[in-house]
Image 1 (cartoon, rainbow over the protein chains, first blue to last red):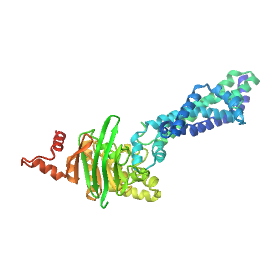
Image 2 (image 1 turned 30 degrees about the horizontal axis):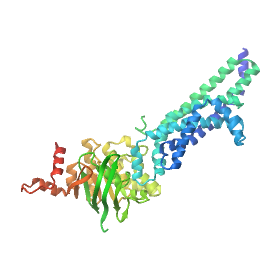
Image 3 (image 1 turned 30 degrees about the vertical axis):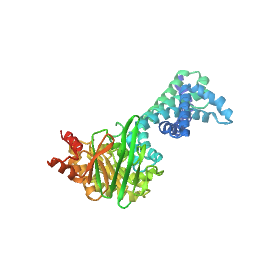
Image 4 (image 1 turned 120 degrees about the vertical axis):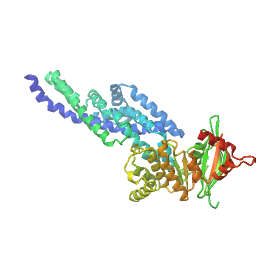
Length: 227
Length: 252
């Protein structure tokens, strides 16, 4: 069959895009975590000094802005506008990973915020009464619990980013969809190639979620976090 | 200051329109076990929280030893010297019993982890919980959890222990094991301030009972005085009428 031979010929090329896609996802998850966690902490525990109140307000604005715009719009804004304006010259791959990551950080900050708020205030009181500073109590008592609580919700960021990563097609990042499209325009066989691409996405989604569930089980504490 | 561990002078606290503490004063000497009783909502818990400034008092002063602590900038250092046991234990849910006792030693007192482990283990043994060292809080009964939380505070080697209704969240059959530990502490000379309505315990350990109502200490005396006065029938004005009226309600 012709579509079989097209598939055999094109699939390695498309599958090669898997590494780019995974690279986007992993970097975006990491950027989202590194930016999102402090944002969540500031939103819950900021409000003492004028500076922290200012940062807290600013973080709310940041979250509102990044969640309020479509991915593609954000991507174009950064690619054509913000990065060139700041004089930052990045390859499309890194622009894509950064934008996906910043957008994820907005969502992740709200996951962490919710998790931090769900830790009983008594935990903080007990930590302070042992003589821990507020920062130490957050770091060694509240945060370890909040991170565990947040893991199920945080896991959702993986399939979201995995699927969202395909918008990077628009700025020419050689991820799976971009490669599939190039093969389609070469072979003019969209159905088998996009089906194959879809299958790879589904499998990646499944494997990733399996890993995350395993992590959830591993870090679960007996009787803790509604398990 | 001699053997005075804690001195409280005119402590007041208001939440919005409600005056919870209205000028509370008392003194605690080394080895004292002072017990606060009184109707709920009369400021007993707030009083304890004002002492280690989990709640900031509005006015009044507190001395811990020779240090005036109401305005101390190093509040963490002050709290280290006062153990606090809560009604709902507040064990750190992500740590084992041993981890709960260890964390203050490692993170606050900067003890090397290996030393801290051994020390924490001996503190658990002191409350009879060493066999449960690797259990998580959710795996412990309320009484066991409260004993671990007592060990967590004791490990910091405090000058005074504050107990905020340590048994009122427990099923009746679990209070005994906690009170037993507290009795041992008291007879071992630990200075303590307790909010409790377990009168059998109060009578057996209290050096003084302070009856609070409406944010002030209304009546105070030794358990002996309170009971003696109750028993006497001399027609003399009785000193502990309100305390006894409260205790009768408690029994009823």
